[in-house]
Length: 288
Image 1 (cartoon, rainbow, N blue to C red):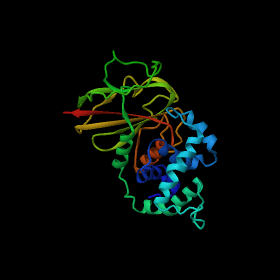
Image 2: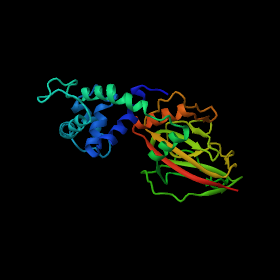
Image 3: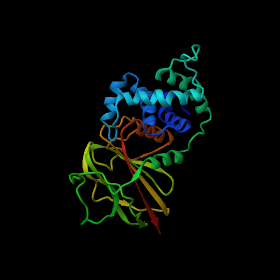
Image 4: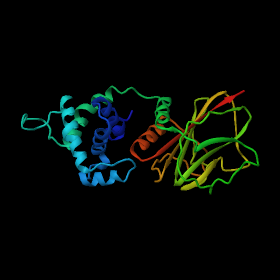
């Protein structure tokens, strides 16, 4: 198991949010200030970047206030031995850099040693929990009459009501439909009823990216998916991002779908934790 701080950073900081009982502004200030990718940004630069993201409303002063009023006192309670007027001989500086140094040197080694190795299915479950049910991903039974071009049907907004899960009998021909309201890149992974997990987009089954509109998988209208045994539930997760994912294992458009192993799902989970992605999910049942 990879035990580097850099590899586990997102998971570790999220675990520390729970440990220190941070929420709301304090949670955001804690995580964003400590991310290695934000190390070169001062408070003003960090605030400006975050304000571009949806639902972020407060200023750089609020970020600093979160640290001074809530974060430093809570970290001290858990052993952050920082220097101040009451403790001039403290081991660390009372700075966010000092806090990260303490977390990396003293807290992270204990965290990683106690971290139970995750199975492929456990990582899939984490991705599933991060996803949301959405009407923008759905399945249609294939007929030549209901086939639509795989690009060009524009939608205005994302929507995410909980769909009614459908069931399809073995032998049914089906297509997967995913609506994208903006240009972007899509990763579609499917866990079969057998337990195997495959990345079906990008692959030979998918259109090229970036793309927008209603994408239909597989892209060949004369070769739909055929529902196969065993009976049970099939789960689909679609990861949408505006930037091209930097994952070296992603298939090329001429490649067959890749069977995802633990290392692939670990890197996908790390990617969605560190990037602004929209995760959708859909489940259907296979019947005899």
